[in-house]
Amino acid sequence: MSATVIFVSLLVLLLIRVPIAVSLGLACVIGMAAGGISFEIIVQQMVTTNDSFPLLAIPFFILAGEIMSIGGMSRRLVGFAGALVGHMRGGLGAVAVVSSGFFAALSGSNAATVAAIGGVMNGPMEERGYRPSYTAATIAAAGVPGMIIPPSILMILYGVVTGVSIGDLFIAGFLPGILICLSILATNWYLSRYENVEASDFAGLRHIYVSFKRAFWPLMMPVIILSGIYGGIFTPTEAAVVAVLYGLIVGIFYRELTLKALYKAFLKAVLSSAIVMFIMNNAGVFAWLLTIEQIPQNISHYLAVTAGNQVVYILFVNILLLLAGCIMNAAAAIVILTSILYPAAVSFGVDPVLLGVIMAVNLSIGTVTPPLGVDLFIASAITKVPLERIVVAIAPYIGVMIIDLMIISYYPPLSSVLIHLIK
Image 1 (tube, helix red, strand yellow):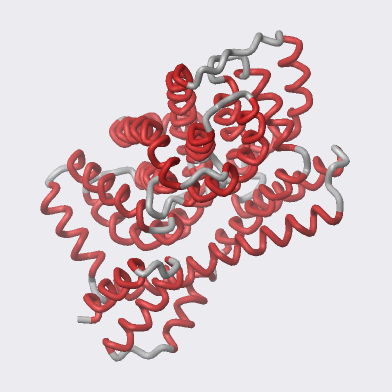
Image 2 (cartoon, rainbow, N blue to C red):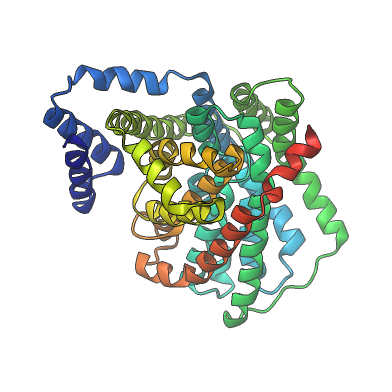
């Protein structure tokens, strides 16, 4: 009975546009009241959810991304990307895509990527004659790999919930993230034919070399982080602290990191971390209530019986996650749905690392699908383009990313090959 009350309450709250974290919390309170469960358990479960050393990586990676953004590193990455692909047809769109891929490897967040790169690229694209809706759609789509390319906040959450190695998840997300970046780049090249924007002249190899030198230290951060984790020098959580320290050193070296800017970076990181942790708190209670009601076990059993084999099960998972991504925050979705999908996936012989990648890709696509796509709202705020126009313009990108999702889901070596090579 309380399970029905929980889901009906959550649905009603979401329909009246109550924020997802608050909706989860209120649905839990209503469900616990209906089931006669003590409210003291809410506090206990919130503390239990956040009582995890790996979770400390999230605020530190968020802070590292903010420091990288204000320390002059995002502009240097955009400059290097411009030297590489700026001369192509739809060059500035390509620059937005490539520089977003670089920045994703620094921040681990799609929202931070869209905000940082979108703020730099919107003006130049507008000046060159790109349609505002096209600019907004390209900027939003380019942010999708932000939660797939390591370090990924979603991968950290999945690793915390399942106990799967976060280092393995980081490595597994690298090639799928590159695939999605390349696909978005190819789509931008094709769509730019209708933008009536001429390609720029190639500036030459020397320009690439000079811009690479300017962007060298930001580009080294993901190399240091991943080699440190797999070299056994530090854990993923310690790697996040190293990323912050590295960002501070590079920002001071570039002489663009002022105390005022640093204060703003810390403030934004605190707010962003608080939002993620608040979502985690309420999602943790929600997941606990689902567990004691035997809902994950029942759904897993149903999926196992209905699917019949691994191929069909993965298809079910993708459909469910794509729909969930449309209406749920990615952090909340991965905490709640992992407990439902993980047991059946293991029974079908799905690699837990592959499942983590599949979940991250699905929920990342959810950031550009209405009605809750956070990247769409950020791109709309940056470009001043109404949301409905961005939704139409971004449809081709979403279609291509779903094709990428199918490749990632049904070709496991794409996620596992680097892990095997490193080990």
